[in-house]
Image (cartoon, rainbow, N blue to C red; front, top):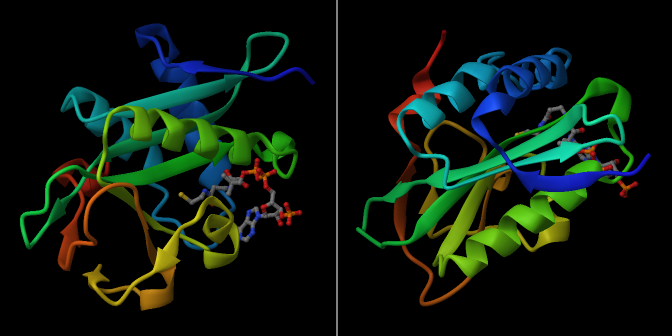
Length: 169
Ligand SMILES: CC(C)(COP(=O)(O)OP(=O)(O)OC[C@H]1O[C@@H](n2cnc3c(N)ncnc32)[C@H](O)[C@@H]1OP(=O)(O)O)[C@@H](O)C(=O)NCCC(=O)NCCS
């Protein structure tokens, strides 16, 4: 399978929605609202990075997004990675790794200060994410909330995602 990673275009929205719902259907830690979150971020103009992975037949088999987060100490330039989705039939083939690496490269190219992620340490550690006591995301075990500083000092405080993360429809 030949995979091409590219920026999303408006016509991709329905395919991204379907892919996201399918990817998270059987996921253990999922609100099953991830497809609504992506749509709400797009409507709010908060998709700082949105990449799709396309196979030979131009079917979208993966998607990653990055959006701005707020840190309570006012540190600028921080973002949150996710949702990340790979189609159930295409997982564990390296597509998620390529998507995340390209999304982080795009973020670095934008001059970001850093990125956070909420997810499996065993997966996100490979990209350089690590839990840090300085950055807190309330309500989750601290080892699942990880940060990747890119420039400047490590901020300190509570992290809030965009209101789009509360979307349920
Ligand atoms: C998580 C996800 C994006 C990874 O993409 P992928 O293309 O399947 O992953 P890759 O092929 O790039 O990487 C596979 C590696 O990650 C590991 N991996 C995949 N998902 C993992 C998870 N949830 N926890 C720990 N490790 C995981 C695999 O064991 C494999 O490890 P190895 O390289 O040491 O063999 C994809 O499986 C997915 O969409 N899952 C459902 C939705 C989800 O949970 N999204 C992430 C939360 S935002």
